Image (cartoon, rainbow, N blue to C red; front, side, top):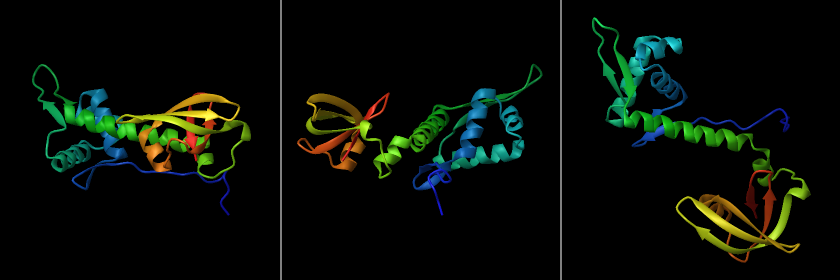
Length: 185
């Protein structure tokens, strides 16, 4: 039997282009190492991978995105060559890391899972009525009048408001955390 202390959600993240996988955890580690080492050889060594494997992986990514993700520089008598990520390579890595970080924080956040149906302490929930809402491209600012009476404001993701179907006049619960507030319905 699964218990809350013995199981936890897990995830895998990858970036796709035209419906095909481009970059996953291993590829992100390779791009991170190249960005840090400025060298494919040094990146491969740091990751305990063969140069050939890393090179082929990078070529596979470039073929999938149909554009260069790195620039290489030949060595010579004065010293070795090098490599650096292109703007596209950096962008792919940053997007992967952003999504991975967001999911890690989300899955680690017990209050989020409580909102989805697990038990929550009553002192963290404040029932109230939505007074107003302002939406932009990314966030929604929801003003809630709580029953005591007082008005509090939560700035949350626009998608969360839309997924919950929150409208002005709805009865909601303001679920308060020490560093932020989220909306539950």
